[in-house]
Image (cartoon, rainbow, N blue to C red; front, top):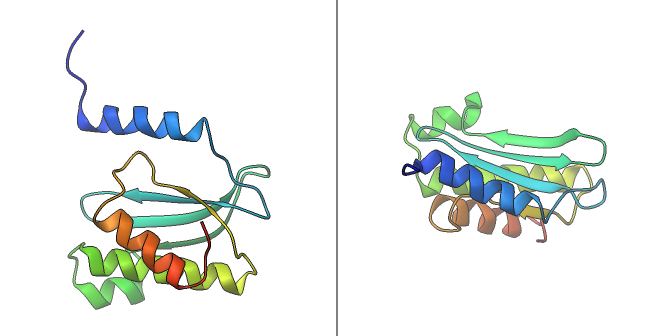
Amino acid sequence: MGKISKVEGRNKRHFRIRKKLSGSSSRPRLAVFRSNSYIYAQLIDDESGITLASASSLEKDIKSKYNGKLNKEVASLIGKTIGDRAVVKGIKQAVFDRGGFIYHGKIKSLADSAREAGLEF
């Protein structure tokens, strides 16, 4: 049995987390994915299988602000954006799905700014 890669380890952690939590229409799942270049956040209703709101660092108005560098400030901006979009749609509570990533750095700053924007989790 060989050594598992970082991606395989993250996927194992993500599946372990996803066994225990799921989103509903009243309390959707805030799923976060971070690549080396971008960060994405989605509010997902798992019962009906639809995405209620999303935000990513690929969006033109956000991408123009940070010139392609992914850092905590960009993650914080994405968290604020997803929080604002959720409040506009009448979503107050969510379940946080960190996607197998460590709750630290960019993931933590996204979660903190989503809380400041009005989401509870």
